[in-house]
Length: 454
Image 1 (cartoon, rainbow, N blue to C red):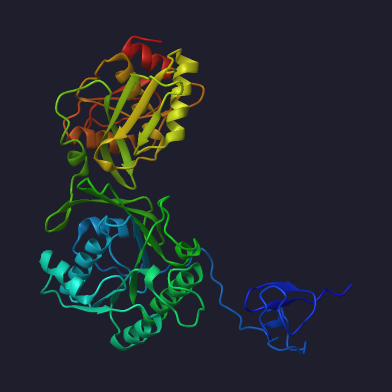
Image 2 (spheres, one colour):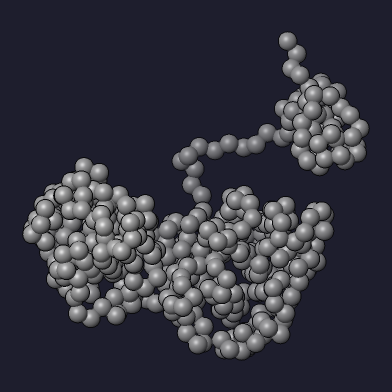
């Protein structure tokens, strides 16, 4: 039986079983054409029916030269990029308004320019005078950065092709306007078209393009998710506007590890690198207090020590509150359920507040045991020893599961003066460089030995 022919409207992508002059879906005229399979050979006399050129295939053992990298001079940014910026790469940087995205990229662009690269900074949100004002405040007025304020994508691509820079920063992708797309700037189709054109230009001309992206109230980059698939690297700039710490996190990186983080501190003269984030996150930790527990975590390839703070108090309401900042709220509910079901420690009738100090967002399951310790410490009003770090994953049965990179966690703890660690039984520690490890087989044993409850 012959395969049914299909016709598609080029304006709205609607499909039809027969041709007509006007699309019934969008109302456009002369936009419907017959679909022709790309594999159709020249014997089939239809428009566009021709075979493509054969491509060369290679096996998995073929060795490729690693891409060259250019350091920005900002070590924390280079760490997140995987060692530096790769030529002809497309990088997308997203973050909340006012978090410091433009400040970071202006500092990075100036650093690249001072290193000898030809750098162009194009702003679609601010005038050139505003960008120059920020540059003077940051001490970057003498950097050889080429500056423009433009939103017309055609003009921008023409300028970049003429200038042939090594790096181009577009701030932001949501303000770009492509005149061949009939929709308002910032719409889904405009953002998709602009990202596609700029990414294609980066690959064709060998220019490294950095795009700034707005985020929604949910923390996702505004526009179609296909933008994140187009680019090579996606970075999120995180932090609280009222807090001085900023976290640059790689959620996608084709040229390096994902989930790598860089830590910055917002100062009056711009963003300053934080070489030892563990010491910074624990800098305000003075005397031990109930509900305060230090967690030895891993962010990307970097071990980071961070403080979990918990508060448990009687609630005047019929429904207790569960408030979480910096951790997963659903995972907190799971830990509370395990403590009640396996250890007979109820939290009903109690408000629970959990916070990660320093504005860091922790996502790894290895923080389960530290969270449980903070909750029990707050509930029982008992402080853990100040020289102790805690890590481990809790299963629904109450067993403690091992986590990876135990050695790195303990070495980082040892550098900061911690002499004791609590972890699951199967966690291996074969070096004396870090603190002594105390093994716990399950949550019941942990509660009984540390808090004398359960």
